[in-house]
Image (cartoon, rainbow, N blue to C red; front, side, top):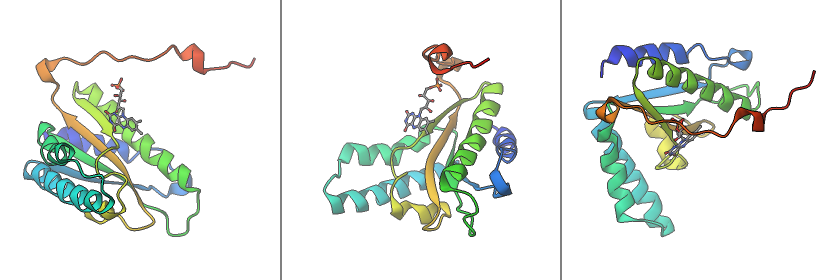
Length: 169
Ligand SMILES: Cc1cc2nc3c(=O)[nH]c(=O)nc-3n(C[C@H](O)[C@H](O)[C@H](O)COP(=O)(O)O)c2cc1C
């Protein structure tokens, strides 16, 4: 897939709302051989952390190494904590995911497949540095982007909005 669409997604991400203009979103785009490098890092990081805590599973390990190659681009989603901590952390995370949704909507407008994943190395402290993040920052997950199999979009499933809304008039 053309990098131009990814650049458009990133540009739109940059216009997300941001309290006190802290602009906390940070992204690393993996594509081409970068996807192999991401897989290699994920495998090594997962092995190190899980062998130490006794939860290592070889199938999961292989999945983390090989799965990235199924996407055209993978964008790591990071939150850079403002040095002055001028807004609560949850507001920074909210801003980051507004940026992610702008990317999601842009991809959808171009008929491109996307999904957010928060598994793998997302919650490992040891993974942050690889994605350019420091101890106060957060790795929030990954946006996996690719051409849909057979060009078909999967149909979505949600409970009715009426179950989640109360009107006051
Ligand atoms: C914060 C967040 C984390 C998510 N993590 C995962 C994940 O780890 N794995 C996954 O398959 N889907 C994950 N999803 C859900 C998908 O991105 C997607 O929204 C869901 O599968 C429903 O598909 P649809 O939005 O295309 O209808 C996550 C969504 C959000 C908002």
